[in-house]
Image 1: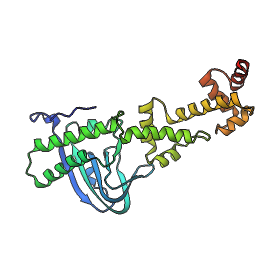
Image 2: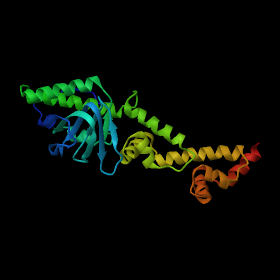
Image 3: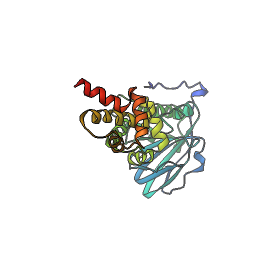
Image 4: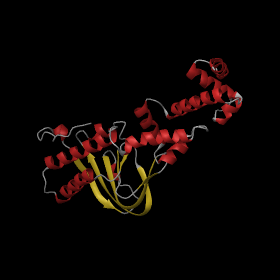
Length: 266
């Protein structure tokens, strides 16, 4: 967790600037946002963000999206929506945005973060507050956002996502794994979901899914008389050869030998 402390007023490397801000009701993403870190807060309605070839991601009222248009610019669509956008640059902004946890992240309604966002909007619109004041608020906003994204010891959206991934893999154990279907179900882009799961578990989604199927196959080999080919097909492996290869890679022996050894122990 990053502990917030106000940036030194005389240190230019800590200064952050509001490059662009405003409230919108149309689906045209502002070109001024390119090269910044963007915060989109959905005030009302439903809004859908589509990044490159990723699956669309739905936002609900009150949700905050944080991403860097320098890395990817989304297409916006929806109905009866109103959102405000804040684009930042300077200081540690880009260093934080380029962390693996923040290529794109979504935060449910968070009073503390939204309160700071309100202060930044008000100060930017009035032009009354000094640069150091605005920069301090931005720095606080960034650290809170980053903490929220990487916290694994809270009930945060991001910790829950790991659990949701594992739940999905367990529910779809008896079929071949599809990253496209998984990302649609969990409402996250394929690239983001893959990076996120690997960073939080040390395994790829595919490897975790294979591990679950091998574990299940061991139970079936020990407790049923089913043919190895039938077990392989039931668990969604391409063919018996592929199943045998994956099983031996995991257990060091073939399924047939595993079954034989299991019978000898009983």
